[in-house]
Image 1 (cartoon, one colour):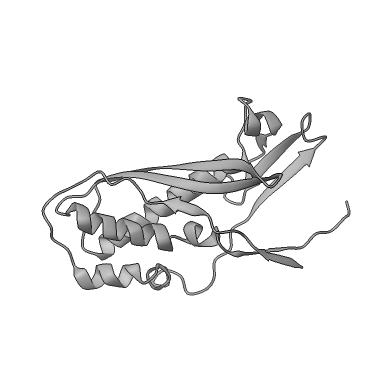
Image 2 (cartoon, one colour):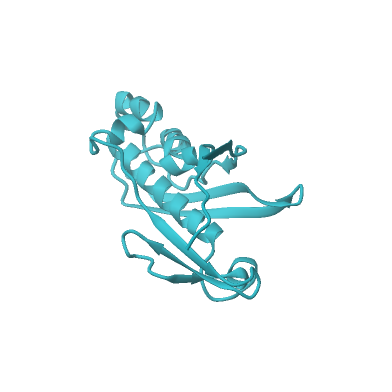
Length: 188
């Protein structure tokens, strides 16, 4: 098993797009900013594991691959060099990471708002994943989250506080600075 620490990824604070009169449950909001783990534990009694798989055939430029998820939402979804570095059909790892991060953050924000006594009418989030060459290695150097929310009875400062806690504590934000382990095997 091989393990390494990934470099810290800069996640730029979300753009805040709602202001209204202040009303909030301070204790619940403060509890959330201490971490999502306590909140999620209300719903899970054990650890959760989800799986995804990828298959690649051929050279990096001419080959092609497929990605599938345990849920079946993605089933042999195509990906390849042209989809990653050009305008080819299919998805790519950075796009999938962005979708996962946007979804995770948005759920965490909704959960945190609810825990603080607010209900969002709508939350829209985009995650822009930056991939660039650093020391001759392709590296994800940043993820910029842009979120817009409609939340009755919350002021901009309280929303910023709760959104900052959600950004810092959503599981995907946390995993991007995690220990990565690997089992590598040759075989059929």
